[in-house]
Amino acid sequence: MRVLVLGAGVVGVSTAWFLAQAGHDVTVVDRQSQAANETSFANGGQLSVSQSEPWASPDAPWLAMKWLWREDAPLLFRWRLDPQQWEWGLRFLWECRQQRQQNNIRAMLQIGLYSRAAFAELDASLALDYQRRSQGIICLYDQQQELDQAAQIARFMQQYGVERQVLSTAQLIEIEPALKHCAQRLVGGTYCATDASGNVRLFTRALAEQARQQGVTFLFGHRINALEAGGDGRISAVSVTNAEGHYQALHADAYVLALGSFSPLIAATVGMRLPIYPAKGYSATVNITRPDAAPEVSMTDEAAKVVFSRLGDQLRIAGTAEFSGYSHHLNPIRCQALLQVARAWFPEAADYDHPQFWSGLRPSTPSNVPFIGRAKGWHNLFLNTGHGTLGWTQGPGSGKALAEIISGHRPACDFPFTGL
Image (cartoon, rainbow, N blue to C red; front, side, top):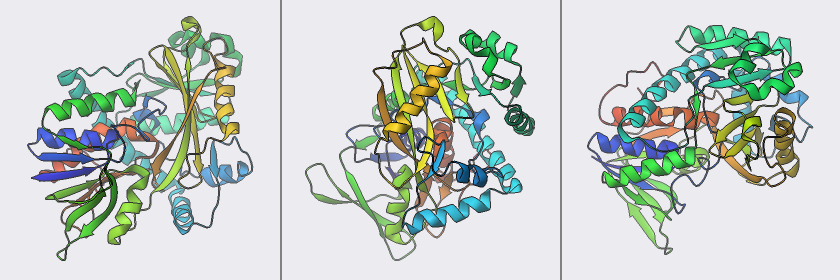
């Protein structure tokens, strides 16, 4: 079967790889000059199944109101005259109920665990070099109430095979000695030894090269304009503009929408409404100057919603979510907030005076559960989008699952695949 994958981020490239392994003729289309040039470029680096917690929770509406006027808020809604944003916001409130939160955590865990197995498969067969560190992930808490809430979530996750443990400050320092100097700040934390971290950009580009060697065609520098509908509930072509500025209609037997935050814009060209909205995340990359003072283990400051991952000789600091449309504008206040948090935890670890800042648009559904599967109402259009903050964690598993669906199989994963 000829399959056209729209999007060359970690989700799209993973989908292309597993489709090629299943024997399909695959072409990947992307407007950028190479793979992983947008949201898969410089994220927080965490492979964090244990952090499969949706933003939508019973506490989220109150927190959003509390942070409404703070430029450095972990979760910031900039309300606009944008019907898509308001509709998304109303759906988000619906997902904040406790029962919905539990259902969403369960779904996120299932695709996360499936992706963990897909990572293991790729690591064993391809030995990709992407600065992977397998020391687990620590979540830090400085308030007892927040730690108690985390303990409840951890117990819930343990039912599904995710060993997220609650640890004392002394136990955390034993795992990560770089926390020793700030022990007085901590009331404790959680730790999942089976989580990991790594460089999503290196992974995606290395996997794209392996896919190319297996016969996958990559059309970079091609702007995707629209889906073109046939009269039989099928997509007949994709309209693109190539690098020379010429219009083309690309034809295939099946089409995969893996365009992240831009998926709803292309879906709308055939009248499909996808409840996905961009959540802008920030990152800062700094050079490590004192390796003994920098963390070996990836971790998250849960109060600030900021993560730290050691990638080679650099420290990646990332976090926050800003709902402000499709702008990539770097707000200086939010950039400096990342460095302020990092300095507080690891003051002597890195050169914080010369950071590389970046922003990316995370494709967020109101529930944080992605759309994976056949698009309802279409015979040959498939979705692999809406992964929010967990595209890196869920990407290979999502790609493998969708390849199985397109090949006529049901994935061995208890996940609500779209259209199945």
